[in-house]
Image 1 (tube, rainbow, N blue to C red):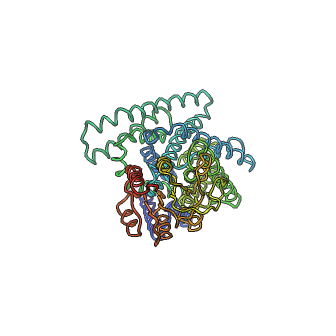
Image 2: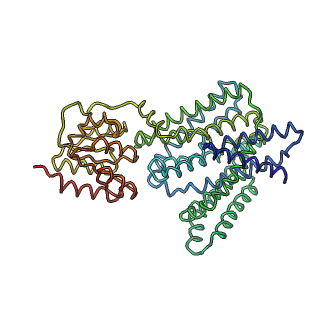
Image 3: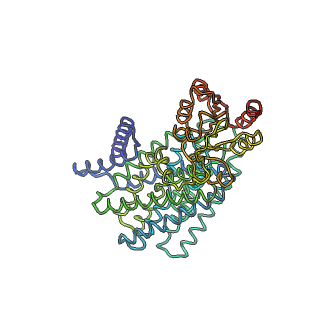
Length: 524
């Protein structure tokens, strides 16, 4: 109990410092665990290794359970094909890249397989939190990323089962996979029928919901133990069983504080279990991180564009998926337990995982995505060549209402120019013979290239409020009508204050816009 209290005190200090300096608590929790071990060793005391191992497993179980709750397949409707293609290609390519890199660095084949598998999966914990904080869970690229995470988790679970049974031979591996499929079928049945029935017929209060969620976790973990499967497989499947709407929304809020507590316990324990990295380990860690980020961002961007996503969405998906998973640590734990990898290799995988988890919020900023978009091949043939324009319409951003808007403008005999930063969108527009410019609609030089001050109307569907403000400021003092798509009341108020015409809510945007064009943009 004293050792556990010490771990909690270290976690509290790490969280407090992280809040003070406004960074992710994960690296500080890891450093706190490593510092705690150094302090205990220097004082001649030792925390029980059984306690550290148990805290690692318990913390990881709760994190995996929470991740499973977020991955409802209903969010993936009509996206099964791109999810399957992107997820499978990324998982296999990263695995091959990781194994090849490990072999080139001198690791034996079995160790290389563990490293390749560890690189293959992305962190559900980090990605879901990022999407929630930025309110992007229901954007097209957010749904794609969630689908890829769910598919990757299924793949890595099957690998976990196979590797945990590998010391006993092929028959044991096949039998283990069969048991895993059976437990997965039970989770699907609970997800589709049992949990919705509970929501419809039982009026449960918050305490009963929490107890029910924990009972589901213990039940599936117990079944995994009985079936000789890693109990974390049961934890993930329990979370998946509860991911059906509306149960996932009810459970998610109650799990927030609990998952934060176990997050602290988990990373403190990981930090305590790490061995001191040598120069060679740090070099190898950096190499694997570079391979992971480069392969993921480039590959996911290319494949996502091929299956129909825009350049911006494809790049953001690649950035968000460029880290290793909490399942990677579970894989390393199983490898050490089976005697197939060394504690030093566990430390290497843990360093890669924690480092990439920590870097993801910094990589996923808008300016990084913009910078990568500037490196994307551009499609300039068909853009505005410099002929003076006047009395035309300009579309800043080509969203869902873009095709119908262009058709309406064409019917009224009004020339339209589309400004969009997405290379894939520009490529499609050029193929359709649409006058367009690839660039940032908030950039005064781009607006000048489109003769925005001489336009009759500017239709703005850019999603970032700051970009809209820059465009409105450039057009202030002109007779140009600027219509701006808005979603929140405060956005509408801001647009009105800056001289724009807000079109409130996306469902009404197309109808309002077309009606306004019919009345106000008649060609004389």
